[in-house]
View 1 (cartoon, helix red, strand yellow):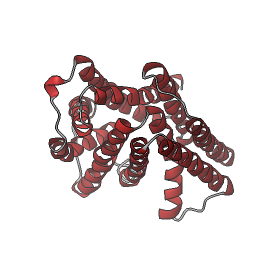
View 2 (cartoon, one colour):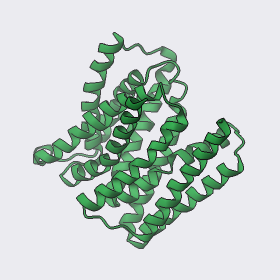
View 3 (cartoon, one colour):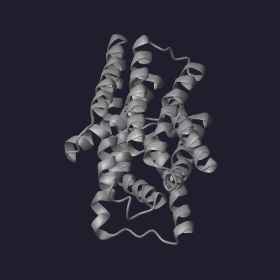
View 4 (spheres, one colour):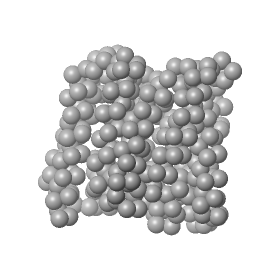
Length: 291
């Protein structure tokens, strides 16, 4: 179990730092979609050989072609379109805190789409999370139109990621986490390439540290972390793994303040506390119910 805990801590800390690396790569000269393309060209170059080495083949059933393509488009192409557009315009702190509401948004979407009845504590958690997200976005409006647009783009990334979860959930029973991530990376390239062509930048002008940030995003945050995270999920319950999500905004806040010189607004602090608190509230209630 120690190995799984270590993997979860490492992955979520790295995903928290990915906001810092993305912000640095974007300010170094990458356009949003060119950064997404560079990240997933490198990620696919790592994931596909590892999958072939471990599983000997990468078979995709014909019936899964459309769901896999849709999961790649939503979970990678559209998600990073919104995230990177947002990170260009708002702080990494705001971005990570808004995205921290994804587990609660997913729970609410399941209640609507699957007609699952929500318990009182889940409804309370969802309401607290919505209020916390609204606080952060309204705080962004006070900081200017660019920050507000950035926060709304990050909110769009959250919605797209919830869509990705629904598109990919039926695939999880038929493919390993490694194989699914490999196929999704390949599928996403079909849409990333034309979108990057419409969002060009001068790649020769990007300094070495910008390329290093892009490489770290691809090799560490995508390929390595997806592999470690997928392996850990086989031996951990969804409840146990969900707790570690809270490390992402915490890591980003520390990194944003120390490395990027970002400031914390009272709205971001209050909203972040409400979002993270809502996740603990819902997870604790689920844990008590399962016991």
